[in-house]
Structures are given as structure tokens and as C-alpha cells.
Image (cartoon, rainbow, N blue to C red; front, side, top):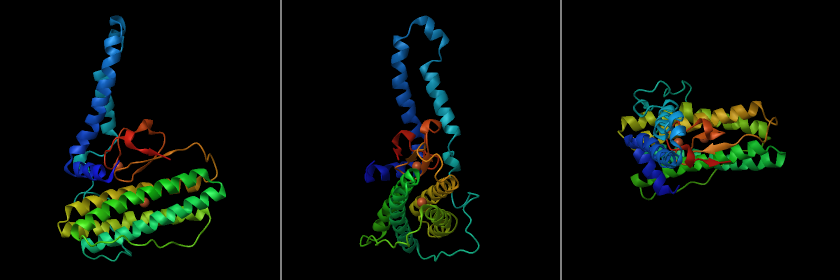
Length: 271
Ligand SMILES: [Fe+2]
Ligand SMILES: [Fe+2]
């Protein structure tokens, strides 16, 4: 998905249109696929089978149950999981300054995970190598969203250079990943969301919120892999939402749309 279409998708999601749009895309696809077999099937078979339209309706309804309702999408005012940890380490500035801090943090995380991916590959941990690369690409999505918004506020905004930590073995790199993701989801992003709300920067609230929830899932993926590192290393795939950076642990049969932004699961990239 191009940057432009990703932005358009995000804009749609902000207004709630994508919630219906994602499902209507599925509905439209299901309907088109379903119409042909019905026309070709024999009348007696049609009596016993569920009609394609009904199947599509059920599928959409089931998908809807698996995702956040758009009207219940977490916001700084209503969500129960937007609190900032009491020992916060986040330096809060203006929303523009916070965007710059977030871009620096995401840039560091992306470079760090690419380094961790190479280490995991060298150590023979294929699954960890794929998860680190998938997460690095997720952080790039956050960088792009935040940089686009910061550039709208100040066209002279520059992308920063990454800062890398020391190299460690893969098990410790997974723990480092968990710590970073937990910091972002429970400290940095909720702090920035509250400030953006105070300043009435609605697009920043949306961008920070999407990133915050993606980071929570990233922490979960790293933590889950840490416990089983080296066991069943090959048989798991990861799928990246190209809109918000959510990572699904495969297969995608059990998910229709992204639980954060409701982009269709068919648009996810496999690792
Ligand atoms: Fe992350
Ligand atoms: Fe998403």
C-alpha cells in the first residue's frame, strides 16, 4: 500500500468510514465470488446449501464481533487503558516536539530491530529473525505517519539518524524489545496523547493512539516468542497490517480485519 493510500485509509478510519468500508469491501468481494456458484449449482443443491448472500452476511457479522467497535475505539477521554505509568520517564513538550521525540524513538526501534533480526538469523533463530524484521517494518509505518503529520505542522522537519544499543544474544534482544514496546504503550504514547488532546490536535491523537496499540501487540509477540525460543521455530508466520503496524501471529484464517484500524486482513504482509 502506498503512503498516499495509507494516509487515505487512516483518514477514513478517523471518520469511522473505514469501519464500514473494510467490511463492505469484504461483503462486496464475498458477494461477487458467491454469485457465480449459486447460478451454476443445481436447484436441489441450492435448497440444502446456505445462500452466498447469507454466508457473506454471517462472515461480516462474525468479523465485526472480533474487532473493536468503531464507536468504542479507544480515545484519551473514554479508554480504560490510556493511563500513564506513575514513574513516567517521558519528557512532554508541545505536540510538534512530541512528534519529533516519537519519530526519534521509532527510528531507533526500527534500526535496533533490523540489527536484532540479523543477529537472530546468525544464531539460527529463523522465527525471531522474521518477527524482528516484521516489527522493524511496523515501526517504519509509525515513522511515516508521524513524519507526515510533523511536516504538515512544520515543512522544514527533518528525519533523524538512528541510535543503536550494544549487540546482545537473541533472548536478551527479545526482552529489550518487550521493554521498549511496554515503555511506548504505557508511558510515551499515552503522555503524548494527553498533550495532543489538551492542544486539540485530533490527528495527532489518532496517530499516537494507533501506534500505542500496535506497540502493545508487538510486546505480546516478543514475549510469546521469548518463552518458546528455539522450540517450533519454523511453523509460525507473522502478518503486518500495512496501515497501523499491528502484527498478527498466523494464520490469518481467524481474523477478517485489523483489530486496531480495521484494514482488511487480506492486505496484511506475511513474514
Ligand atoms: Fe513497536
Ligand atoms: Fe491496522
